[in-house]
Image (cartoon, rainbow over all chains, first blue to last red; front, side, top):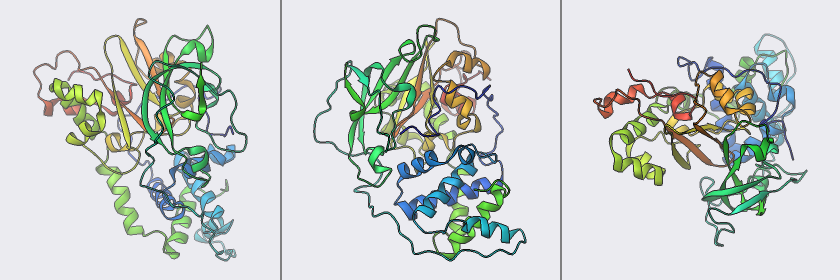
Length: 223
Length: 194
């Protein structure tokens, strides 16, 4: 499915921000806390399933994805979503505690019985061995799928769908986020770096450049 | 997820709730945060590049198979660095890195990503009009320079080997390190001579 996080090529975001060499790692103390609490949440709740976290980000609505408090507020929102999905926290628990912290007196919901995903990684990290030889070789022309499954996450962004490119490299095989993110199996596949011409992606008037993106085997067909 | 409650307070609430359940330990969190504030940062990537600039045999290995070569010189450990690929900028070819779907970034060599990299405008636009975006960020490239944009859509992470600036021929590896900026290692800036 196409989710809110799929920004490549989207219009209306205005000018980019020039780098600030003096920028601290965390602009405010709470951002570091939100970073750490989210990282540990993923480890403890989802067995370090990074794809599940990325999918939680994608499942946020626009207000929570583009949270006015910034990037780490988005992380916080995704962590809370994963924790309520797993019934580690009751819906509304964070809000109630936050209100009490600022001096209100509200009832906090009782802690539910956790229902964590039935999941254990078969190995550390995301890289896996795939026994079959890669379907494509460096230099092969490939076409990316034009459609994606409407019920699953995907790592095939909108702008890269239905286009012809050339395999530039074969990368180590990975587990497939489309199923891994929803705790339905690792299904490792070969991963290819595919190079596209800018005019193939954006039309004849596009700036001249090349773009590479890593695409999973099932996203591709021979062209 | 309520607009009226600032994220700082929601963070405190979440940390408290998880601490009460025994799911996080604030002291362990302190160490984790400090590690990314002080140890895992772009200095690692700068050391790798300085070695590549001063040792042609190392550079060849780095471009052919980056992971073992990087780990020889500097490695921050942790997540987001299972398979890093290094690409070389030259007078005729300029590489720049983005993650359009999130903010994937090679943490063990660059640390956590800066704000500009996470900015929706950068993520949306650099895959569509990179020359214009780079110019807005202060990097004007000549028309005959080929631009290659790398979208980090899987677990592969990209590190740019910038061009060594003219006038640094007499500098040692150690003297080159502080010249090499994070932004040059992602491809939105060049390294300047001192």
